[in-house]
Image (tube, rainbow, N blue to C red):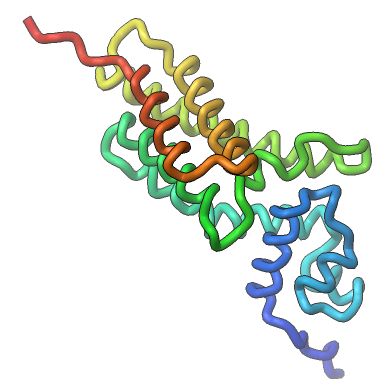
Length: 201
């Protein structure tokens, strides 16, 4: 018995277009009709068969975002020092959130900050992803404290929360129209809180 008709669209390209719509309009501001039009899919059943419901598609789009436009995050954590990791992360955010190749800002920051009860699952997904990012940053700073790169008396958890807040602020400022140069300046100022190593006696 033959299977269903083959898909007439490129799944990866369609997912990229779904990401763009969610990124520009937010989860709740994006309707199924918007997704069908952007993704080049003829009807809702075809969309559901390929990607699941809207919430499942949103999660797939977020994974696509993490592997693509937000790939700089993974690269930042590969830096040899914690300071370089944080600095690369923040400057990477300044570049990515102002790129002319996609909507401004960051989908994980602004995708569903405020929503109705029916969209709480999407909001919770973004909250969890932001929390995971902060936890990864905290882990890296805890390693820095253990190795002596972050001097004694400096709280890795507090630093992680601070830099996560700067990171999210960069995205909000970008979405509000701040220039790339302005955002890089903000990052440079933020990095001045990084403690200097005590002079050796």
